[in-house]
Length: 377
Image 1 (cartoon, helix red, strand yellow):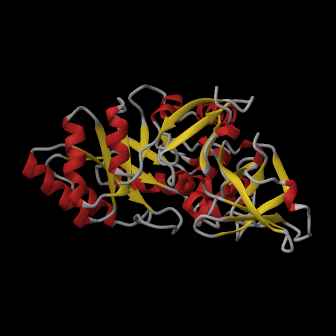
Image 2 (tube, one colour):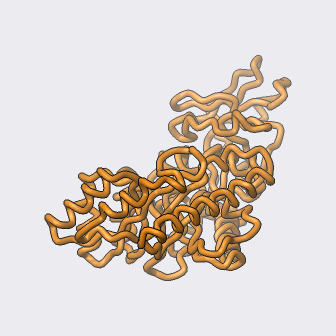
Image 3 (cartoon, rainbow, N blue to C red):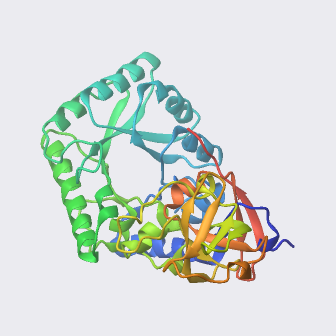
């Protein structure tokens, strides 16, 4: 029996109880909204967690890299949306997955991209499902909800390039300052996707899939507008400090942490030095613009209990600096050499990406499982 304090550091830790509770909440939330849940697997990239989330063994699921699609397809997941605009050179890998029995759908937002997919399908006698990406809030890619270019994109899908529907992501919800703003983002997201659906329907293109979703809007939507078929959310399996900072979860709900060791002190500065630098924690400072800046992470003891007066003030490549949030001096040597601490991340996705496995820990601090994850593209 291995205990968490016996692990090498840095190590990536999952609190099993919190993970299970977070997934159960998401499943119940989808039922409450009366829509399918297509969980985004990009945060954890782990088969064991996917199996806990998916409604059926074969999906539906969302992925953010072709490598993820290949990894999950090998585990039996079939119904996937690759929710990043397609680079045409990747079509051969998508096609190989679909010929092997998967149903990996892609997204795009331009006539040149639609033509590239159509030309590939014609040349290879392939069939690939396509969703048109909609920009609901100016956050990144996609066509505006009432842009007539959408019809031209749909018409450019020929041969085996099959129009399947529309998809959007309310990324600006991550910058919300209140629950009211998140609720408004959810309403806007749904109205935008339905406007796009209707514009396409008027031109004769019927959307089988009308897909919305970000973790904030999924959690805080007041209701589901009729016609939205599914929600996607990703980071909610773990949550993180950015999500806690906008009120989507509590700090106590965060299931992911990085185990680090104390390697020294700077007594005059009131610093504890650890082996958890920015390669383990990531450079993400997503809470810096929020009302409570969490530095590079909040500090817990080895059992995951928050030490509210401490934070990770700064990070170098392999060094983390912990001090009091108020800057007051304290007995740093009370945290002895090799003391294990757990750091809650600002953004779970890049933090998890630094590791190739999770150590799953129960309420006793016992490591019950070691789960691998896929990385890269």
